[in-house]
Image 1 (cartoon, rainbow, N blue to C red):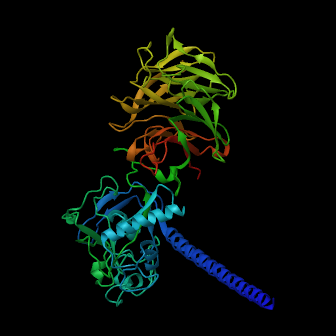
Image 2: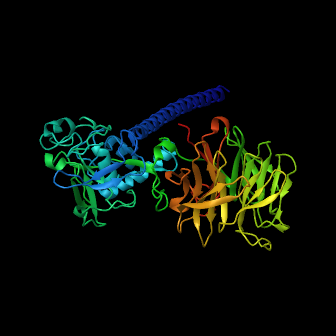
Image 3: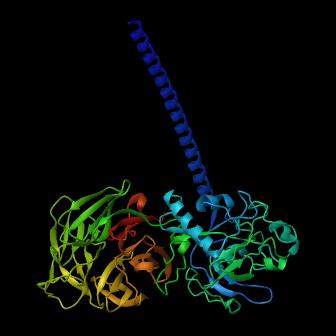
Amino acid sequence: MSVCLSDSVAVWVASRRRGLLMGVVCCLCVVVQAGWARAQTEEDDRAKELLRTFADEFVELSPGTDPFPPRLAYGRMADRPGTPVVLPRSFKIGTVEVPQNLWEEVMGHNPSRWKGPRNSVEMLSFDDAVEFCHRITQRLRDEELIAANELVRLPTEVEWEYAARAGGTGDYTFGNDLELLDDHAWHTGNAAGNDPPVAAKLANAWGLYDVHGYLWEWCLPTDDASDPPGVDRPEWANGFTDDNGVLRGGSWKDRAVELRLAVRRQVPRSTRDDAVGLRCVLVPERGAQPVKGFEPTDQNRVVPTGRHVEWLWNQGEFTEGPVAIEEGEVLFSDIGDRTLRIETSSGKVTVAREPSGRGNGMAAMPDGRIAVAEGANTGGGRRISIGRIGQEFETLAESLDGKRFNSPNDLVADQHGGVYFTDPRYVGDEPRELEAEAVYYVSPTGEVSLATDDVTKPNGIVLSPDGTTAYVADHAPDGPRTLLKFQVTDEHRLINPQVLFDFGTSRGIDGMAVNERGEIFATAGGGDEAGIYVFSGEGRALAFIPTPGAPTNCTFGRGSEAAVLYITGEGPKPTDPAEPRRYGIGRIDLRP
């Protein structure tokens, strides 16, 4: 009996010890896991801080606004003139060269000979530099430190020299006085290696450090497609091949003469040297540029610095015809047969009207009702309807002299309570009853009259703020793609047509909006040319706003959002190539 008791006690003691041991092990595991989690969190925080610092070290240069001149005498030296270049849009450039701690975080290694966390990274080829730009673009997008349509890349030579000169015309950013060179640059006379951290010398007038000396900087060649349109390669720059890369700025290994702003070196792209590094620019995705012949003259006034299109919703089939009905609320068409409403503060989208008669363009009337251009094809009303959301829409007009409209496309209300509307036929198998594709006027009581048939295929239409001028988009797939200006008569006729701009073979204008200044915001272009084309009332090109896909129409908000432009059209490309491209609605805040 005592033996059994002793055995039981022994078993109990052993079990107890095992339990204590397991408890200790579990505690240790918890401690280790907590420590690992803390270390991982600290590492993540450190990485985010490096990325945030990099994003914050860009400075925006806005050619055409003080203190940034619109032109650059590219390649200017004392012994030869520069090539005149007009920079049509702003860009952001790093104030410092890429440091080693950031390179190591993004690329996973540090190739530099002269080690230091905030020293400029060196020993990298042209292709290494390009790969870094690709990777850090994705990291910055993932952390939402840059916009989804922005990317990091190497500067073009034009961008590099424009930023380095900082408005100056001398051989150096500080002029031609070589006694000032030591204050601005590391060169063979004052450096024994790439030992100093970035920004140890004086910056130029626009805040860029080390544009002279320290490290040569990789650049995209002069005639790269990213350069402003019309930039020709100077004669002295001939001989560039795809196997070569371009270096600018000089290095710590070079004499003062090699540090002049116009000096360039062509070297093999595979070159890796402890005197070669990189500086980056941050720009909208490459290719976002207006059609040929559209040269913005007032970009930075129309589009405040740092503004871009924000996409709000992207689940439509073919969105069109936005109209603001009150502050914070915009209606828009999904032409598959529904009208949608978006609450602009939350981005919430709901169905406002279904079916919609294939409603396309819409206009808010003085009495609060909504006029709709209902098109042709299955379910299409082929009429101008009018009503209030939540109530039945009635026919305001559907024919001229007993002949049904072709396919009402877009419309605009005048100060008398009538509407001008365009009546082309793009789709629909219904027999056409009207020969002309024209613009008509419908009075408040429904009487229809011809406004003009001096167009081929009218699409978007808007009026000037005083109602005396109409702007019509003539948009024929195999004909004119122009912006037309008409004088409005008291009898609601549109006369004296004038071509303000010709889009040639590019996708012409769809819908339009007009702001309080009488400036025209036109949706046009496809692919790389897709965007909002802004014109003065006389047709002068003012600004270009890239959109993620082909835009279809636009409108301004109401109240405090009167300078917020809402845009319908193709949304961003899906990340999965197998996914279809969707349509939706976005906006850009143009308030100063």
